[in-house]
Image 1 (cartoon, rainbow, N blue to C red):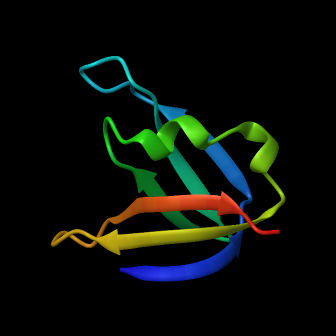
Image 2: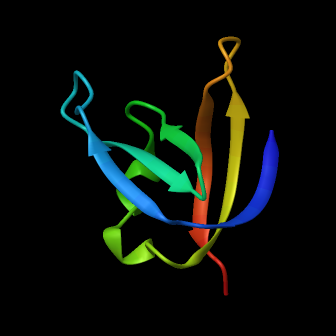
Length: 75
């Protein structure tokens, strides 16, 4: 798992999970991280985070996609 501070440049809501929960694509200066389906962290993401430094933790799938594990605004 990778832990970093990154500035959120774009946030895109993508297709809901099969259970109706939100999913997002978070962009950080050309680097994109996707949220996990049905993860509680998805409910803490808001458009008010755009332009702010965020503490993020993520991992890579075997296919090389970055998946978000944790996000919070930097204090």
